Length: 208
Image 1 (cartoon, rainbow, N blue to C red):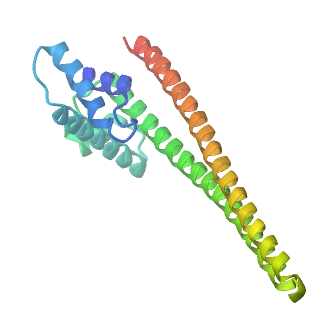
Image 2: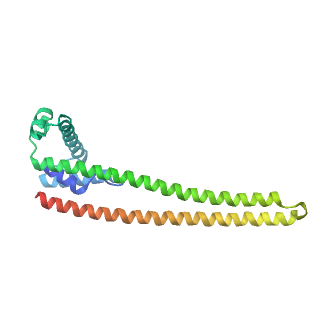
Image 3: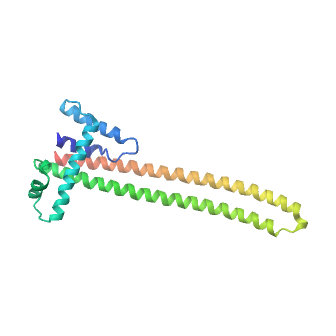
């Protein structure tokens, strides 16, 4: 059952969903395992058992690196009795899952940093344009002569109207750029999901 669980986790990738979809993915894993073994397995039990296997494997891997013996079987027997009975295929699947999870975490971190930089850049540009428009209005108010108060008032009013129009236009441009950016990110996620599914299928065929 452990081997089937690991394969299903590798296929569904329940650790890599968007917020709010992780539970649904684990339910998918549990449902597929339940159907395979004709028994009811709660999704939280499947998740907890997988996490336990993963932590056990990672602990043994850390011990092996610290001791530096290079003897995987000896390390497992001495440090992690729970994983003694695991076959090479289990070990390989666990290693693949550890590697893939690290890749996903790094990709999420890089994407988050990229999105934040993009938002900061767009907001900074919009704020700078608004500030420049306000400074132009203030400068005209200071330099206008007393004999031109009426004209100045009309000019100031027009400047304010122009400023509001420009601000509205900039806000619209910012929203459109964000919309295009979100569309591009969605396309990238769809491509990544497709590539991930292909890799999973290829790996499953190799492991069968």
